[in-house]
Image (cartoon, rainbow, N blue to C red):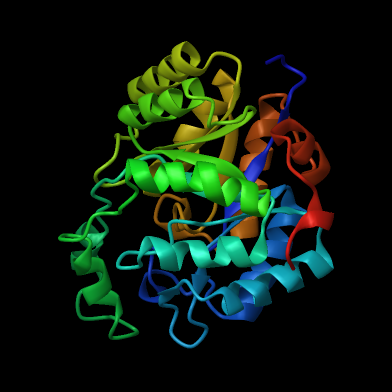
Amino acid sequence: MTSTRKVIITCAVTGSGHTPTMSPYLPYSVEDVVSQSVAAVAAGASIIHLHARDPENGRPTAEPAVFLEYLKAIKDSTDAVVSITSGGGTGMSVADRLRVIYETKPELCTLNLGTFNYGSFPMIPKYAGSWQFDWEEPYLESTRVEPFVSTFADIEHMLKDVRPQTGARFEYEAYDVGHLYTLAYYLGAGLVEPPIFLQTILGVMGGIGAEVEHLVHMRSTADRLLGDSYEWSVLGAGRHQFNMVTVSAVMGSHVRVGLEDGLFIGRGRLASSNAEQVAKVKRILGELSLEVATPEEARQVLGLKGLGQVGW
């Protein structure tokens, strides 16, 4: 990659890990998810990464009808790429998580590269006694006993069935270095089609830590295993968000921000919107003399099928 490369900003607008008590700015009504997505694109994001939530209480849901409300409204106002989660939230079955992908046939969806312990329970003590909804604490506590499940069979199903049936390409999510070896195995088996969009996640409880040394190791490992077949993107969870993406951008990455990944915009200050985080990372990229990709440029880089071929 050269100094004139275009950096793709992905914005993960709501996710399934944080809960409404943690920030009044976390969107969960349809109107708020849509308006924050549209504003994030206006601020510089070319990809919107979407989870769905019950519009009444913010609980994560896999219901395709909720996704479709978001998708149609976002498409009416922007030409953004939408990457739909296939990960959903804790307690959802793989079949439930994939329903929306089959129904909506997006340009991009996530593919998690392994089963692992995704722990949200450490956040409980900070908010104990102040929960806005009664589902929040039990949901977070459930991550102590329920792993996120993505078996080799699940991965193969996505590569062999989801991809040909929907035309979607994948945002491959790597939470630890072993996930890169899994991806390389399927690349070698001819089941993974370059260009690979590799999303490296640092700082999640149960995954690799948000340290610069780990970032460098993930990058060098991906280079060795995947060669020039991939486009690298990075997100840092929680307070590590902007540190990680700043370092990774210098190293040649695309970047991801959003209230799914971190609720703050600075030390002790909640982000007022997803667009505020996008605007901040765009300023950082500008100071590094890096240009931001448009949605159409992102499509070209990632080899996507185009907005005219989605199912909404």
